[in-house]
Image (cartoon, rainbow, N blue to C red):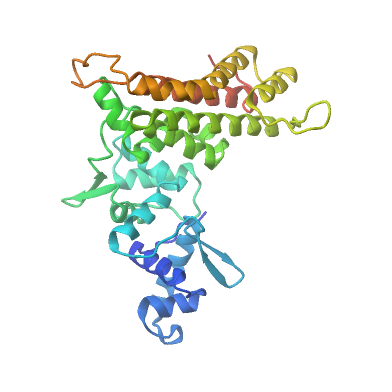
Length: 342
């Protein structure tokens, strides 16, 4: 992989141009600089090419033949500065090299060292380095990073002594959950790079959302857990070439029968099967209804350190999320690495 040294402001201008019907690289260049592409200086042409390549890498755009298309999930009528930053941040936080880079910074690496280590870990064809490397610039534009006296660091809104470093109080835990970027960083550190890479991007997204929603919307966090669990089990089956069909040749789609199929073929260990069945029960409809009721019940007094009430719904959602994370890490090592954990 090669990460283009693209200017984030030019990138979002390219997005706006594509959304307005400028659907080739040449037309986009003409839109950004209000000048025919053939008349642009070569440095500006290179900036356009790098910006479009970076947008494709971040899945903001896709290119079919010579035509550029905006990601179908991006629907914007007013391209003001705040909207541009929000869209850019959303897709930057899904970009694996940035998640890894951010995670190293979260462990107190400098921007330069974090970028170098990320490049080594992901075997980038062109090493990313320097305090003001391209990922640092993108993070500054997105607002996940800040700059003070020439030093790049994680924004205080995100850097709240995340769980992977230390969370001695419930206040720290909840603060960590408030940021999707912090949650993604935690998921990566908790699972480890290999297991994180193994799970699909949709599962990564659901795990991060489950953490961030556990405090504010625990019932929706449980929906993410159930969806991630089902997709992970299907991935495990695929990794061991297990066909998820019953004796009549019908597709098996429910979590319980999938677990039974995996156990029948001894793809997962007995203790893993039991844990996963517990997760299956956890994500059932009855419990979802119960979570909504629990969340509105003043079941706890104030925590002496956090000085706040912590709903039972939040507790249950967090426990389920951590149980799923442990299960994913355990099944990955058992099924893929052939090692027994826990």
